[in-house]
Amino acid sequence: LLRAMRDFRRMADLLFDHGSVAMSVFTKSLGIGMVALAHGLIGFVTYTYLALAWPLMQAPGDDLGRAAIAAPGIFFITNALYNYWKTICSDPGTPPLCADAEADAAKQEEEAAELLKDPQDGDVLKRPKHQTSAEQPKYKECRKCGRQKPPRTHHCSICRRCVLKMDHHCPWVCNCVGHGNYRHFCLFMLFLMLSCLFIIVVFFHNFPELIFHVRRGRKLPGTRSARSCILMSFMICVSIVIALCILGGFHTYLVLTNQTTIEFQSNMMKRREARRNAEFFRNPYDLGRTRNFHAVFGPNRFTRCRWLFPLLALPPTGDGFDFPSLRARAP
Image (spheres, rainbow, N blue to C red):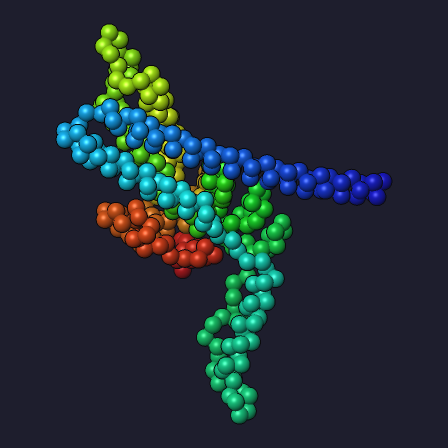
């Protein structure tokens, strides 16, 4: 009976591993399709504006006036695409394998000890300045991928690896969102919303008869296919803005409270448990809105808007392994 139970457990583990691999491959393939869909929607709306709607718009100065109106939209969509590609291509943060980290630490300790020895008698002249392997922080080892698991690190079952300060796996970017690309993910949502709002305002001002189906006795501008594309682009942008108001508002709250999506769920459970025990729970990484904002967008002043442009802004500090917290500041 015990042997049968062991065989059954072994078979169940094997089936679970194969199912996990199959789900990972399916989700990755789905992510590639969703990235292509996102580029298709952006390209369709951009083509509709520049090729179909732009010639029909009436602006002071004709082409010069229309170009001045189009400039903000081009600026918004350029920044949105840049941050989108950075979110896709950037490593969200991968901790090293435990065996490699231990080997590197031992090698560094030996090299430092050799450099600090007296060449005559071999005595150590002074204690190494760097931390020894015994003094270095010991992180947990992930049982699934064998990598180090510092605080706020979680294992992604789709990418099949641990991610530093993991927020979630986003199929729209076919990548995890974590310590290395969370800033670009937030800026992508911001500039995408600004791009959609730009299209909504411009189309609402120039083509109200197409949007609201009024003035049917008046000849409508453009061809029938152009009018259909303009109306469809307007509806796509409205839908995206509604979705981003919900998702962007949630991530704004997470940024200002220094939480990830995973931590938000666990903190809610801890808060309920603390309330039942007549205790008060506070997120240990919540250091105030200003410091929380700097933790994501770098030490840049909010009012100067430099944080909007990653090429010009100071990058966030930290390596994704250790984070300042209220517990560390407590006496």
